[in-house]
Length: 477
Picture: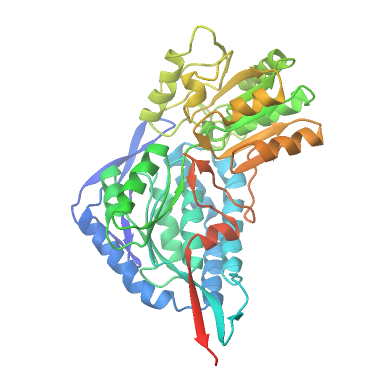
């Protein structure tokens, strides 16, 4: 059995309550371990450690922070096999996919923020007022409280604490209650390079997360999660006027015009829609197809769904299987609930049911004939479900694409450059891909608008979100 502990002030510790919650393997539904359910005393201890560490960490040079992060990246690379195995059991993801698609980007992102720590920008010092010289200081915010999701436990932990500590902050992070294992493992690796208290991990449930956010110590709180969770964090943080960084849900439109390469679009959409069982806020799950190709594209997507190999009943080293179960029983029930509400005017082209009777598998699904006001269009499903709508012209496509509360990511599929540029300008989303969907790079920002939240992950913009700006002026006579 796996036993997880909190990581506070550079060491593993049990919760002061001794209370625990079960760890469940989504592939089987079986309990295989436990993690602490932390309370306010545990949170007090973690924030006290982070506050003590901040006194010295904020004074370290960018070069020192870079050295620490580069050493951490090297250790993550060396521990890749152990991290992949633990992530696989905790999330149900196939090991070969995690090893190929998550470990290399994680290491690259750590190394990116190591370098980014040394190139913070501000206005040039100068005499903006006669007899006075001004300059800008970009400083760390302070102690940061963070809450990470269960869809990419390792990678989202990296996205959160690496830019924060690179900028000179200290962190208390809470992973999801269902996926705490690898976040604690990362903290243990980081402790080889960061002073005690710079990175602390508290595990627990929603009550733990709410207490972490409401605590008076952090100057900023950051969450990746649902829109409802983000709104709750914003309300709680408002009591102390804390800064917030909110990366919330998505409902990415995938706009396919009549001139697009149907086969290439179907293959790309399926890969980006079923990867990680569609549990990605940028997933390509809301297809808008021109009326001239909607039937052909729906049929092509259905064939892709039939060909998508789930890990159900497969050996852990089967490299043909790439669609995992959803993360937990509640999420499986939620996704299956959408199938019970399919309106009469729509149809399930393929899938639309549970796969097997063990684990939390949902069959890759395509639902056609949906209308803009349907629940499956307006609500984030967060499962391996691709919906298809039809449009007649560019104006209608934009109206439908932008006609949801989310604004995180989108894509356009067309051979016409002018169409692609017009659409990229008019789509109200934080990211627009053209003839592709879902690739991310460390140098470019990730984050949305509207109910998808605010703030950026990755890139220099992500690092700058964890800084504050101070103006210094000196009288020179």
